[in-house]
Length: 286
Image (tube, rainbow, N blue to C red):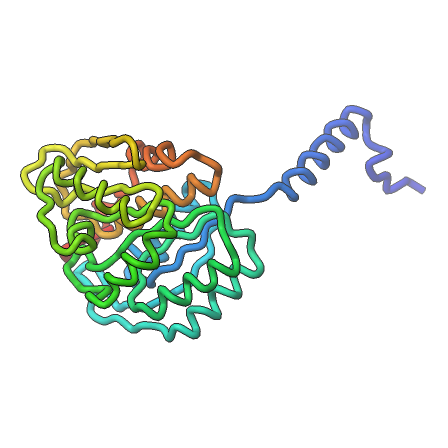
């Protein structure tokens, strides 16, 4: 009767190659995958929010879990409606993920109420992570208010002091600083320094909305040195979700072990605004 064989009946070269492949597979199966948790709102149009976060992390080779803080009805026209999830349920999501997954970095987006910020901080004190990336989302690209003025004080007093990096645009930076004028790169540098004094280890003030600037200039401050990150300004209205993708890219690179400035710079060499030809007829696209 002909033997069914098995690995012992294969030629020696096959056995050696296969054994090597099995060893590699076994090693890879136990190697830890970098993990990010995004705590943010859901964008039904998938251009921003947790949907954008998950796609960027996947593009950077990082696993991304999610905790939803709010559900929005939005499309390329803008945000039509926002439904906040109860803080208790947000806390349940946080405990479920943080108690089970080996999360390296938490990235926050839309935190629409002080109560949700509190449950986030409570869970992070119970389940510490390596880094916290805070994108202080307040207003959508289309102009819809996603977090009211009541959130500013808890951001300043509780969230920013525990953040590793914050990534406000000039409007958000101005709001956090009480409405100060930010219309030049010099004023961005001053804002970054003032925000750093609130407690975050690093500050990145985004200058995409800066008026009368031929380049897009972001200002990075580490407490000692400033870095101006220049890139050509793209003449497009397809800017929906750019803040989410930037913060998520930073979080993904930090999860993989990159130093902070290197993690920030990765985004400037990677094109994520890749859908200007989507067959949509409205105002703003991903």
